[in-house]
Length: 248
Ligand code: SAM
Image (cartoon, rainbow, N blue to C red; front, side, top):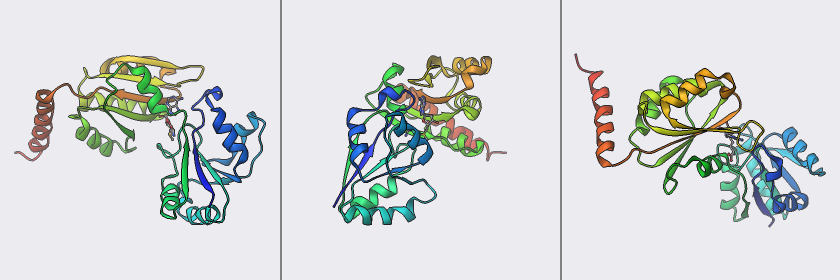
């Protein structure tokens, strides 16, 4: 059978494509892409034109079986997403699982990932961290998620989009307290790259004060809470808030 290559692409700066990514993209039989137009542009930047197939969250299940059949018949395929590493807040999980279950070799071509790029410049403990991806879009669900994460001792990494960054930061301040240390990484590797650090309240003030700081793509890295005592305190406050809602 052929191999399924999972290939990372740049998160902004096209110079971040790897030599091996270009080499594998040039020789596979077809490239599965989240958005074929986007990937066609990327390829044409590097002087390549390759057969593309669409694989996105809406057709992944249906496509996976066909793609696995192609792999079993001997074709080699690549999977890319619009930016960064496939499967990280991007499609591909179902295809990779189906390929593995069919005994097909799945091999990575690693490269850019916004979460790791942000962590690498945040100056926040990086020995243990949890990737939380996108928070729920609805504010109730988002607050509930944050309340559950407030006592986490590991560093937390979140993705956020321009239209919700301000609202989300306000929810972070409410759930984690204004003083929690955090880093907001915006437009990494791009022209307007900015990395703001401080406490959550300061980050919120910055984003509220400057409309430019609300544009683009964001990663928020939040410090975990210090020690067991503080964890217990936060947990105590959470339980108190939960219980007090039911008290007369
Ligand atoms: N697979 C990608 C990766 O490996 O990072 C992530 C895809 S996810 C759909 C897109 C989100 O990643 C954006 O909303 C933003 O939170 C984050 N992101 C992507 N590129 C970024 C960049 N250049 N700077 C900051 N955040 C970025």
